[in-house]
Image 1 (cartoon, one colour):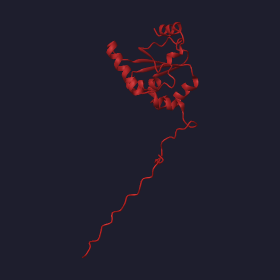
Image 2 (tube, rainbow, N blue to C red):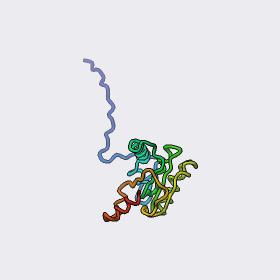
Image 3 (tube, rainbow, N blue to C red):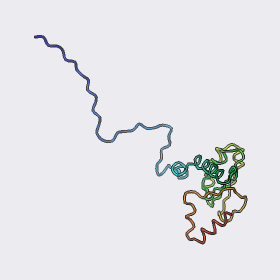
Image 4 (cartoon, rainbow, N blue to C red):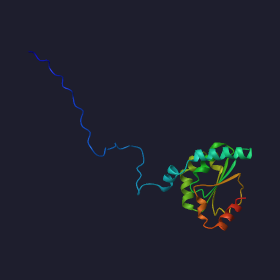
Length: 165
């Protein structure tokens, strides 16, 4: 009897059990506790400035029956929301108020610098207490991400809300 030759199938290499190694990604920043920029991480993880600025503009138009043109961002930090707002329309202006100078400086370097010169002129930055800035007036004032929780008692919170009018 003649036998037919058997075909030999190649076996796939066995996968190693355990952690798979991911290839290093080039061109992407490596975030570690030492190298991460807290302002950059905050903007990436907490804020959605393009979405929020459009939401405020749409909400204001529905509520007031006119376009939102002067937006004030209290406790603005890096004022990324205000930077997005001025991009929406060539007549939009943003008033940015925060006490922390180094954070405002970071915003100037990383957010304001990305705007064109006309947009930059429409961003007004104040390093001051939000309860002390009464001018220029704004159509809408936003205090985002629980910033107002800095007010530990009702009378102080009430004073802040009254200062907005």
